[in-house]
Image (tube, rainbow, N blue to C red):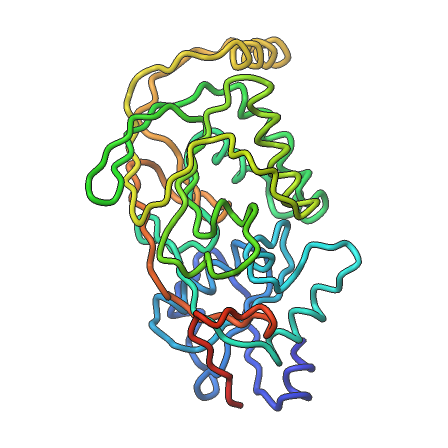
Length: 323
């Protein structure tokens, strides 16, 4: 990649590894002159960190994305990769960076932490943070299977959601997700949804095998078959800002949740003692980020990214990169 940038375009390339403790200023500290473009190489977590750093700095330079993660959800939404097994993600991504167009997209913020895909809380959201990098590298999406199955052993939680101008919702949920793209891309063909100034609030409260199955089928049809199953099996709202707080009460388990908990206790030889939940863990782009209460909001036109020229919608600001 470095040779390609240097030989074809004459760039001086500064390659930097990303570390968890790195700040935005440290990542973008110039070594040789000013940047013309920043390229993020990795999965959604790495890409989100780089985009957040550029947005935080206020730099109006484009960001290119080379997807090498488990899901590469943002790259798929931007049509930088299609998810097809016979596709060379590097070749398409490099061509996009070299010959694509630049568009502005929104980003989300969860208690000051930037995200490109989603923020979330609840047992289902917590399960997404469990697989370590090595397991995700080898098993890819299958790495999430066991943590998601274990999430069924946890009872739903009760939340108070304060939306936009003060509207309050009292909900029970096993997972709350606030996504930048419409439902993380499900059923959405164009990338203009990444720049509409809105977030999607998803409240998932599956209580039976059939409920879990409907959610699983919806995501399977989208991620594997690139199809929209139509029916949305969870609460869906368009918001600009939402505050999430735990309501400290015990929510009753469904028969499915009780059976899953009893089976886990039997297999582990330990009896679970229910405790009142005063706060819930939160996650951002698949990584742990803190606990509730948490405020999530949209930041319109936060950063500029490179997209394939054929995919750049005319309603977004488009500016060719000069070398």
